[in-house]
Length: 401
Ligand code: PLP
Image (cartoon, rainbow, N blue to C red; front, side):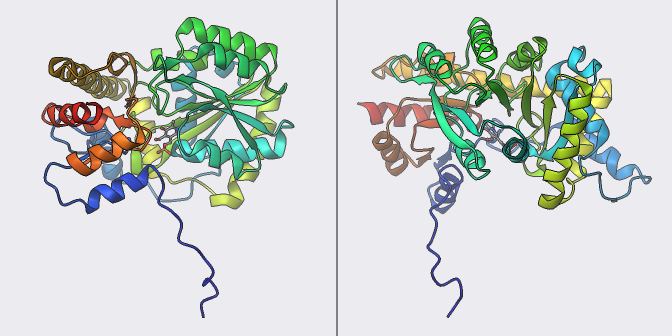
């Protein structure tokens, strides 16, 4: 008998399980709108030209070796990542009160942040938006942090429940951690306006709530790296402290390279130094040190002004294609006279549209139209193309009529 005989079969991950089901479907018209990965108009994964070029340079550079990186990762990568999210002229960087460690993409950055907070922060409660990315609750709960939620999405308006959000943050325990999506909220595609961000900032600072930003889509939402970093920057500009988890999965298309960074903005350089020393103690027994290849690609691109420029152009092209898919889907539904107000499709931002379709409608669309998406009705706009929009519009129309 196996010593593992008692183990039960676990269910598939709700997001990654969509792809498993999709792969099993033999239909030629099947469409995967589940996973959040960019696809071209031809439905193919995209490696950015600037990434290919950076990789070529790395391969040609015979002085490069495969030695271990330090525990905190590649120094250039860390410095440039902080600059990217906080801004080139950030006083926090100039005053040396930011510590940045290279982590395994966005997920790994959140995890290192969670483990650090569990060990070194006295308030073990985090509020996450309702709804949020499916992994957030587990990342923090498994690090021993109590997870509660704050109201975020209003199904009635398919927009932000701003009053509810303020009420819930207002009644949070003093010092609680608050998870904020820096931009392109996943799964809803609904972001606060700059005015609303300012109110959130004031409220959070007045209650000493600790902001933990998840920045998985910088540049991918609006097409502009600075615009998408606005929320983080106002929290740094006030001199207060915060954490930021960055991912290069979407904005550089480096999904499988697992490149990301955790920055902790502190009050003083002295605190930042001590925080970094403790981050090393979190990382060392977990995976010792991060991988070198992906971070080297990112560092090359961020360091070289020509390559950086090239990246922003390719990034904007991805963002623009997604925005154009929103318009195409909206137009297709309007032209068909599909009942309901679908304007949220063009109002929402980022990779996903939170359609408002319910679980039954989603199963109907999967069974009858071979369209795969998460059961909450979230569709990845990045997985759509001009060719597949009509098929999706037909399916939505049939599902709601
Ligand atoms: N945070 C959010 C909101 C996301 O949507 C994702 C990816 O889908 C991530 C974090 C982390 O992604 P990764 O670990 O691939 O960088």
